[in-house]
Image (tube, rainbow, N blue to C red; front, side, top):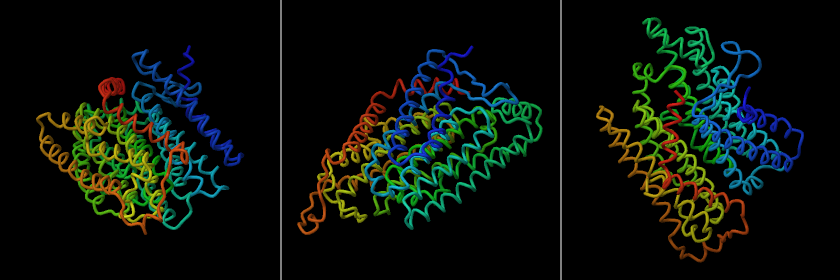
Length: 502
C-alpha cells in the first residue's frame, strides 16, 4: 500500500491543472487568490515529498491508474526530482510576488485572469516534466509549456510582445517537432514510451551492435530540439525580445523556469532514456560542449553591446545557458552536478535581476535609456541592492551562488581530458565579460545624478509603495547568499539525487 505522501507529485500536477480550469470561471482577483493558494499548497507538498524521499533513501514509481508498465503511465520520484519541484515552486511564488504591481499596470484588468490561467498551466507542465517517466507524456507537457509561455509573453498586447511571442512560437514549435521526430525514431527502435523500458531497449540495441545510425539520429534530434527550446546558442534569436519586452513577472518566470524545464528533461533523457555511457560514446555530448562554450562568449558579447538593461539581462541568459550545456558537455558526474547547481543558481539570480531592473527603471521614469539609470540605486534602494547582489553573483563574487557555480565548473573541468583547457579559458573570459557589462551597470546606478532638470523627471520609490516587491527581492537576496555560503549540503544532495536519478 502506498504511503499517502507518495500521492503528492500527482496531486501537485493535477492541482495546478485544475486551478487553471477553475480560474477561467473566476474574475481576476479570484484567479489570483486561487493561484497563490495552489502554489503554496504545491510548495508544501513538494517539501514533504523531498523529506519523504530523502528518508526513504531511494526513488519510487507512482503508477497512474490500474495499468502497470509498459501499458500504463508512471511518475518517478527521487531526491533530484523532489528538490527541483520544490525549488521551481519557490521561484514561481517569488517571481509573481515581485512582479505583482507591474502586472496590474501592464495587463488589462479583464485579461488578468488569463495570466493566472497560463501560470497555473505552466506550473503543471513544469512539474510533469520533472516527474514523468513517460516520453510521450513529456512531449505533451512540453507543448502545454510552450503555449503557456507564449501566452505569458503576449498578454501585454503591444507590438514588440506580439512579435516576440510569434518568434518564440515559431522557434519553439521547430524544437518540439525535432523532439517528436526523435521520439518517433526511439519508439520505432524499442517499441516503448516509458523511459525505463526505452533504456532497456537502447542497451540491447547497443550490445547487439544494431541500428547504430537510427539511434544516433534519434539522440541528435532530441538534443537539438531541446537545445532550441532552451535557447542554446545559436538558437537564441527569440530570447532577447521574449524576455526583454514581456511583463516583469513573465520575464522572471521565463528566464528562471521555462528553459530550465527543458534542460531538466534533457538530463532525464541522457541518464534514464539513452544512458550516460551511450551518450558519451555517441560524441553528441561534445557538440553540446562546443556550443555551450560559444554561448558563454557570444551571449556576453551581445550583452555588452546592449543599452536596454532588460535586453542586457536577457542576453546574459544566453551566456548562462551556455554554462549549463558546457557542464553537461564535459561528460562527467562532476560536470553534471555543476550544471544542475547552476540551474538553481541562475534561476535565483536571473529572476532577482529582472525584478530589480524593473524597479530601477520605474525610479527612472520608465526610460530605457541607459544614462537615465544614473543614480537609480539611490532612488530605489531595495532594487539597487538586489541588482548589485545579482550582478556580483553573475560575475562570480565569493559569498554568492554564482561563485559556487563557477567553482564547481572549474573543478569539473580539471579532469585531465582535452576539454579542460578550453573550458577553463572560456570560463575565465566569460567571467571577465560578465564583469564588464554588469559592473558598468552597477557603477551607473550608484553614480549621483547632478542634473536637476533630469532629476525632476524621476522619483524615489520607498518600501511602503511596493511591499510585495520588497519581500520578494529580500528573499531572493537571502536565497542567493544561502546557496553561496551553504552550497556543500546542497551539492551533496544533488550528487545523491543524480546517483538515484540514474
